[in-house]
Image (cartoon, rainbow, N blue to C red):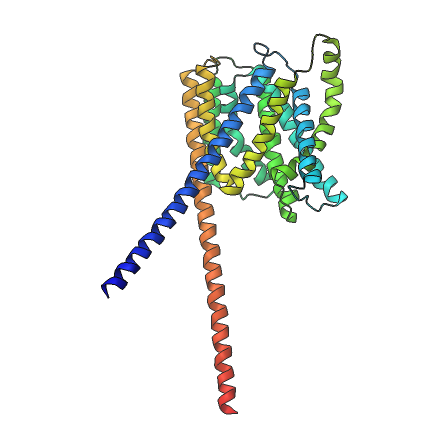
Length: 361
């Protein structure tokens, strides 16, 4: 009796310790994915700033830089899908590609072009502060396209984020109206792209991971950027005879951009999109600190106060989304439990009816 009790006790303790180990492993892996994403996102932003800024590498050609990224990502995605067969392509008709992927590609190319252009005129820290408006833009465009329902409390939250960003802009030492216009345009196009992915692809049951997304969208982006590049940057680059393509700089920059897409896939796939939003807030604070301490950008107390207000608004928005997701998950589980109970009841009634007919026979 004593031996049996002690053996069952030891087996239960060993099983609980193995459960704890697996939970700890999952938590550590989640932190690892977050750290990798933050590092790569941080690297790409700082690297792009370094290349485009006139006081650093001094290559102020955002369309050309974006096209280099798109050409590299298209080529690598093509190899991974068609040559190495590491990723399965999505079955997509020509009509679906033209009606869904092409508009998304156009919006993505505009978003990347404008956001890269903003690095020429604005500091890294101020750009991160302006990016806090992304939830505002996504929610507003979602309501406009009837993908989100209008809620007064959510709108108050959006206004508080906007108010915080406005204070941060007021306190900006190197305020440049053209740079702000470019970054706000980038936010608007990126928010529209995210909503369009929901409307044009997700609603049709099509999900693209970063590899298949680059496989379909990157060539489209390259094509859209080619026309403004020929008109705006190509004539200037043609006159700059001293320029030689630096394979080390642009090669490593493109590898970082591609790796960032893979990190997004890992982070969202293994955790959630909400985790990425929360990690994004941490990354923004790190970039502001780096921008102030290493790049020596001026960050004023008014800047920080305004961004602090916006940060609280974004944090509350993420918290609300988490609560809504939890409630939705609980409803789904309750519906599944009701369905299971209903099925069991039907089975029992069926068995009871069968017994009744047997006894009558």
